[in-house]
Image 1 (cartoon, rainbow, N blue to C red):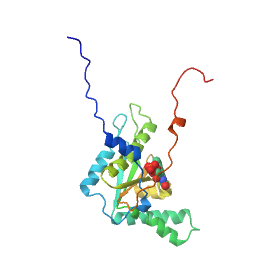
Image 2 (spheres, rainbow, N blue to C red):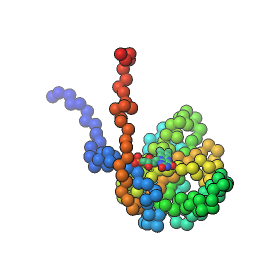
Image 3 (cartoon, protein in one colour):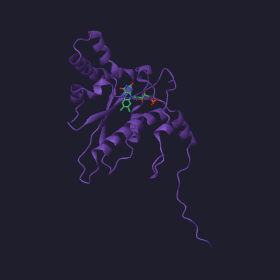
Image 4 (cartoon, helix red, strand yellow):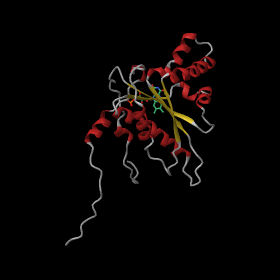
Length: 209
Ligand SMILES: Cc1cc2nc3c(=O)[nH]c(=O)nc-3n(C[C@H](O)[C@H](O)[C@H](O)COP(=O)(O)O)c2cc1C
């Protein structure tokens, strides 16, 4: 009897997932229905659990979530509006009302906070930040897999220090993204995609001609 190669439990191909990823687009927050039905409590729990299931060197979980639903969106909007007027005092009052309603665009907004930790074993902060980015994208994908629209935004308020204070961020934390999640009123149009060939080369140690 000949030696049989070891059979590994290879993952089964998932053509539906491949097709979804091939066509995937974000859904603009501005065409979400902020008054519509967002994820239920059970769905939110599942969404965040999936979002946290990302590559994370040395299992540091260097990120956390802050959720906004219902009245909390308008309440937090007051911090955004105040920050806006402080930063742009010359702008008309109407504009601060608009800014204060940003989170109202979707029934659920999740702030993903990059929260790097000192790692005694040396996982670089860069890798921890990348892991937070992976959380953001995984959350978008998970939300779309449940039939919601999703968009990853930062806009200006992610970088405003008074908004960061209202979020309770520590000195080492940053907003990786505000993920807007909810029903959509319009399908997204196609978006130009990069020429992947132009961005890729196969490494060789032979000097190019
Ligand atoms: C970190 C990060 C922040 C972003 N912030 C914004 C933003 O503030 N405003 C915006 O229009 N798009 C922003 N985007 C882009 C959208 O998330 C998204 O890429 C864009 O709508 C196109 O989506 P698609 O390529 O997934 O279809 C951001 C993307 C990333 C990765």
